[in-house]
Image (cartoon, rainbow, N blue to C red; front, side, top):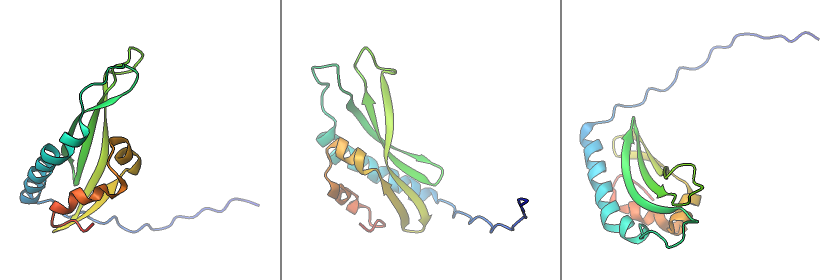
Length: 131
């Protein structure tokens, strides 16, 4: 039997709302404060004595389009390492509307960083995130 194909109309993509600069700067300031006061002291440790394992060297945050990321930079001290460091984005916040963000995290990375599954408690300082 011949394969019958036909054209179908696709719905228009939803237009993402514009991200106000005030929200962008406020979120960056609060995230940096959270990172410096809570997350870094607990999870950024001195380099281990052995060169066999990667370790967290820095934690920071950055914007990319309508997405706000929390990132961890890992150092790779092993002489067999492909690169001396790499970055992992372990939390993503997508701006949806005023005072409304979609929050996505990687549980495996949270566990790797030593944050228990209830690590989302850190985000309660942001009033527009409902945890």
